[in-house]
Length: 228
Image 1 (cartoon, rainbow, N blue to C red):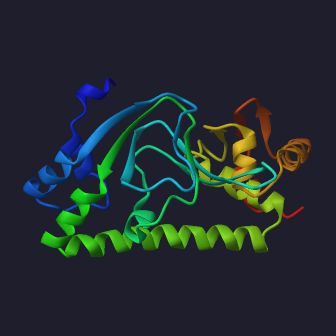
Image 2: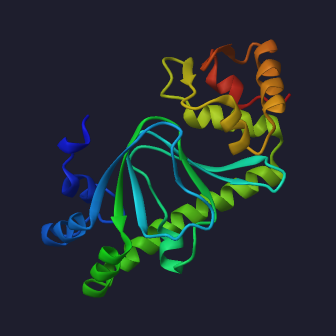
């Protein structure tokens, strides 16, 4: 869809952050929002860049990552349609600690920090909503750390596949990976080689069938309870 056809107030109203705000409030926030058509591979910001607001992904995907001094990349989060990012840094009034890059041709909304701060002064309840959203993100982060610390690489891969699997037809389903295997491996705190070995091992046990980015799961419950 062309960016000029976007109904910005309607999109903002669907964000959990602004859900329940009255039409005049949404209208004021919309005035401080701009549309962005961003091609795949574009960098939205680098670590150290100042934060001027928050982003909403209307279409596409954005990768948040950190790069070590040696040049290796760790994917922190993959932001998809309907999700926002940048809230915590905006409130801290600190520079971005991560790099943000589009993984596909994307349409984004950028919501000005100033318009959000102005609305917070008018309605403190908005602050509670934002705190709830940030708490949910923190909860996911803690769950990630727990997974890296307590689960084996194979358990992480199986968990990821089951999380991304659509509802099964009977007990069979197919996962279509929306990003490259290298990005998924980084997200799961694995090397790409280790990730590929795990997929090969699960395939040799006939727990999955890999065809490019399509991964068929013949028996969801068998994979879920596999302990190997």
